[in-house]
Length: 399
Image (cartoon, rainbow, N blue to C red; front, side):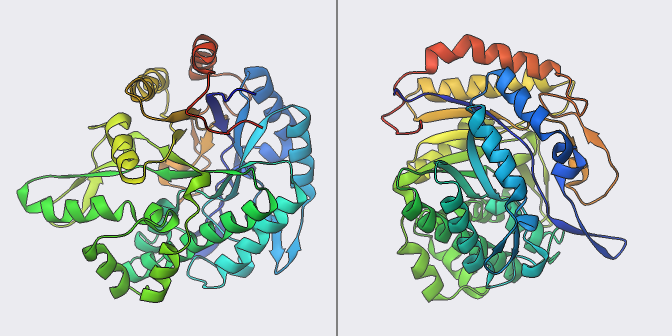
């Protein structure tokens, strides 16, 4: 079968823990958006929309119930239905959180137990061939270990590096075991594509540092050598030389598509006092994705984007124009994703507050009624599918 351009959406399934009024609370987007009650209707929306690829995963925190213990009931039902509907999941195994018994990303036992979970999942569902083992590692490590927002809620470089190395090791180990179970697997590593702009010349050194720091999650996952200042940064903040060498000696990139996520919040201004703030879109998807592609030379998929109404239709058009220009210029880009299928809840506070605020970001609202961007995306797919469903750089990406 010919390879095809992958038009996709996703069902947002974040589940970090946060502290609200001093109490640890699990934020479960699948619960907040009503997916546990309406999952059959949600899958039918995907089918009726005409999208064949869905970023989707079971809630890791409630599926992996203990060492070697799993509750597959929800996963069995949902993945069986996706198979019946001929929707291809891009399986999202870890999305910003861990089960209570693993505590958080500072736990050195997390990578081993997560790999065991990934292996058990792959064995249980051997027909699945697309995986994102760990979603947005840079964001997960930053929000949990650097900003003090999620999970361990720590805010220092050592905690960031600890979370980073554990997330990356979990990612690599999961890829290794899944590939043994499913030799035809393709890994689509969804990662936030960032950029830091200096406010004035005094900020250039820090901006340069941050513009290499943004690559660390993919450097470790793809065994890409790290420059001396950032190697020193890792070592000074708790990574050992043996740990670094382990990453450099575990190369799995031949089975990978680099997923780049881009939002208007992905670009930042670096200020003279060392702080950063959101800059809004300056370079845009094309320029930043080109930087990531130049570094790793892997096929690319645009794995996440959205913006709230009333700007969503214009944003979709802009993101598509960037992607199409990237493809026209000869770069191997194989898919596009509006994320997500449904509106999201409380992402305006990065899930740190439990306000129940509905963020109008989806193709459908939470009453499962199509939004204008849903209509626009459906029309875009109809117009472009036949033009793009050709042999895409010889990649074996279709089941």
